[in-house]
Image (cartoon, rainbow, N blue to C red; front, side, top):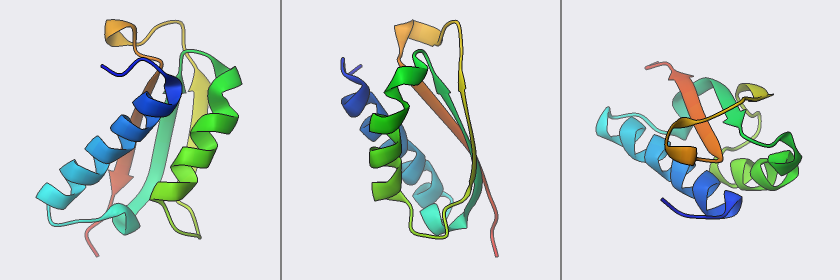
Length: 84
């Protein structure tokens, strides 16, 4: 697992993009994301990276700080996508 929040956010979003592609979808199909952060102070960095993966209008998003993420990760992202 990458060490920095920048690397982890990029990896999480790349993984999400790849899972969507395997289902024949793209990031444009995402309508909602939930971002879980170990440290909410990382939000500005994550937001910058997030914006590079999505186009406006951005999907709805929730972002919360959590007490812990499996394997000591700094970020976890889940999404809901629709097949239009």
